[in-house]
Amino acid sequence: MSFCEEIRRAVVASPRMKLPELRSALYKAFTAGQITETEAETLDTLINARAAIPTTGAPARRRVGSRPRSSASIERRRSWAAAGRLPPALAAQFTLAEQAVLAVVASEVKKHGACSLTIGHIAALAGVSETTVRNALRQAQTLALVTIEERRRTAWMNYPNKVSIVSKEWSLWLRLGTGANSRTPRVQNYKNGLALTRENMNPGALEAPKGLFRRRQSPADPEEGLSA
Image (cartoon, rainbow, N blue to C red; front, side, top):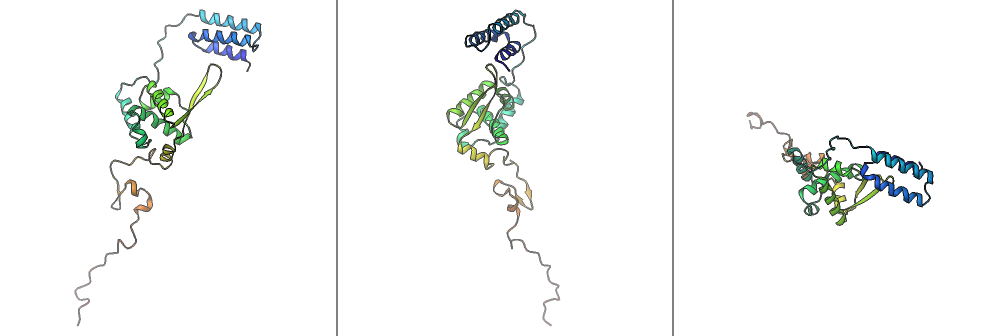
């Protein structure tokens, strides 16, 4: 795809507020020799025509992950924060809402090796605002817990950032299953009289030690064992 075609597609797809930025990029490309004079004139005409189109009265689309007020959003936030996907020492450095954000990130990292969800998607899952997502990721990056890779698609469009966990403590916590997907049930279940707790969740822990349980002997008959 030529540079001229990229600009043309961007002009058609971008909102009107982005047109001045595209026009500036157009002239820079022409100065650098990336497009011809004819192509520059054609694109400039397209930008003018695009700017002249009146805006429709359609209502603005509601932002995904805007500040949540519903009880469902609050419940999602609390559930993620309580999921135990961060070591306690690290979780203490973040607010409850930020813990929910990082729990979503940790879940994606555990499943796919990295988190490539958009800011809005993370916000919707965690039940927080997009600002909270950005603050949580910025703080985690400052503390050297994660790295954030910006993935540029074209000069005007980006793929979602790729977030990776680099903290050894956090990575070990997830790898050992101490946090993600291994919450200890609040209500203990019982099998063969033994409680299923964190210490005996493995199948071998349910086996009774040899010799602990013996077959109960039936009592002898009154006549047996009596001397004649």
